[in-house]
Image 1: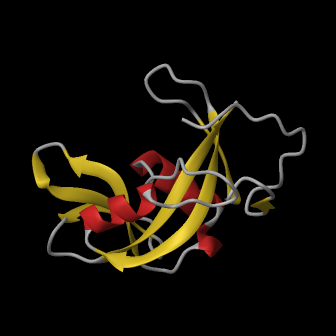
Image 2 (image 1 turned 120 degrees about the horizontal axis):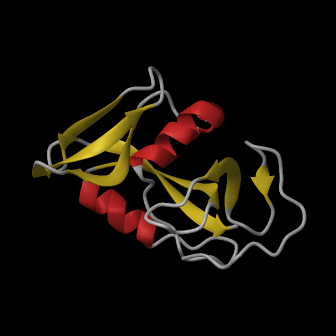
Image 3 (image 1 turned 30 degrees about the vertical axis):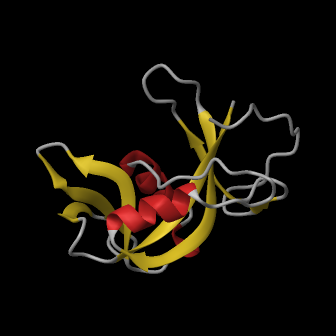
Length: 135
């Protein structure tokens, strides 16, 4: 988990956040009783299968931060709503597997806004690392 935000200057949604390794996508509600957080859209990771995308996100280090990962589905919905201009108009992997079949994972389409599950080993989609700043 990322450290609490100590900066008094939060950028506008879609703008780079100096020193935070990406651009602000807005505020997300915390999951499972965790605190709410700012979602930071980090580097584009290119097109690949799901597990290599998961590994690539976890390996990102930017602006001194190494707490990146692929986004949850809800985070992707926020990204589509708030900062679609930061994405290609294609499918992007989430970190979430399909509950009924772990051979599939969820992805977000940044042209139409839909989410769907796809074969993790047979589909190559784009990926984008994200990180959190607790509020």
